[in-house]
Image 1 (cartoon, rainbow, N blue to C red):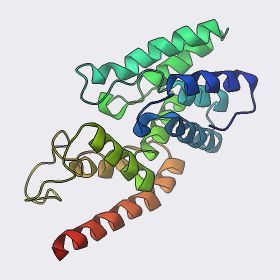
Image 2 (cartoon, rainbow, N blue to C red):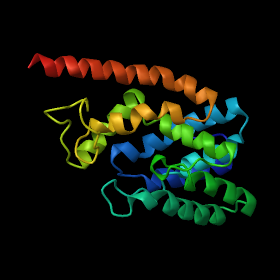
Image 3 (cartoon, rainbow, N blue to C red):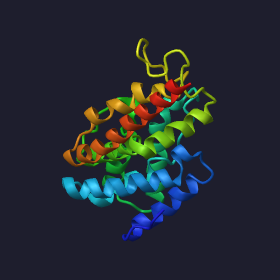
Image 4 (cartoon, helix red, strand yellow):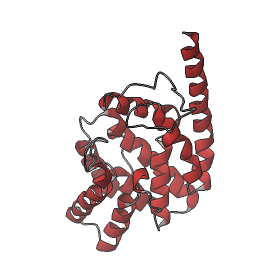
Length: 215
């Protein structure tokens, strides 16, 4: 993870790096660093508070329960609570703490919430951008392996005649979530960054379809 210029952010970066140490690669310190860089870029372009947005990005993985965990859907809420406690220990004013906490609480795709603040929408966009494109596919396959799922359904790998079920097959995640992300982005800057990432995913799907047809 690259350090950020402001001392308060560098301290948060160190806490985030420690919290994500030894995590599986879909939610590790590199993921946090990518989202933080994207958040900084989007916040600057869209007129959001860069420091608060980056703070939320750095802390958005303090708690992350595995996808197959019974309380997985509560990861965002648990992470927000952990971030509040950390920011209080770090001496952040209450008003700033709560703005950061709100961003983290509502950022998750699975929660289905649209954040009220611009900073929250920017964090959500940054996190979603890291779920698509080449890196998004790498994260998807890492999670597929972690959950011990088959890569694809042998009969209908591309969900042509069935509803996608990413609890059963890894590739289904593309159809259940990843291809839907661009339409759910909030900012023009994020949508511009998403376009080539979607092109990369579609090119990959085409290559995979040709390879499976070879056999």
